[in-house]
Amino acid sequence: MSPLAKVFVFLVTFLNICFLGVSATLYQVQKDWKSVAETRQTAIVKLEVESSDQLASIRGENDQLQSNLAAVKTTNASLEASNQGLNNENRDLKSDKSRLEQAVATSQSDVQLEKTRNIQIDKE
Image 1 (spheres, rainbow, N blue to C red):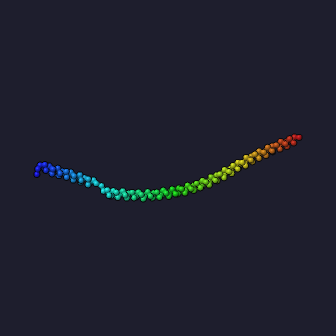
Image 2 (image 1 turned 30 degrees about the vertical axis):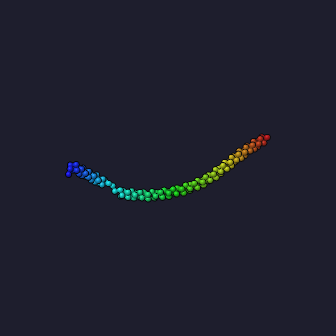
Image 3 (image 1 turned 180 degrees about the vertical axis):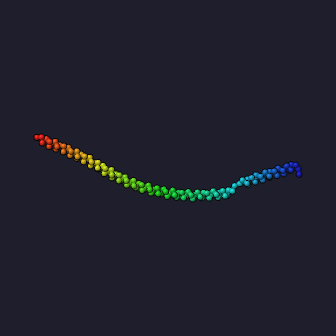
């Protein structure tokens, strides 16, 4: 064999050994992508179930709060109507009070006038 062929045989053997080392290293470092994907898929399904449960719970709470809000609005409307009635009654009572105060003042002035007339009649 010629020296050039010996160099080429040596070079090919050396490169084969390097390739074997690189291949062994890559094989050792490789990950099991199938099990990783299955694990992640299982986690996704679990999260979807949990999120749908939470969504159902939140919707239930929302429905409850909506019914509470409707009840509060009804109570508020009832209280506003009651308040309006009480305000009208209060206004009527104030007008009655002022009318009665005027009547009392008129009566007191009439009594005072009668007293002064009686005193004048008694003096005469």
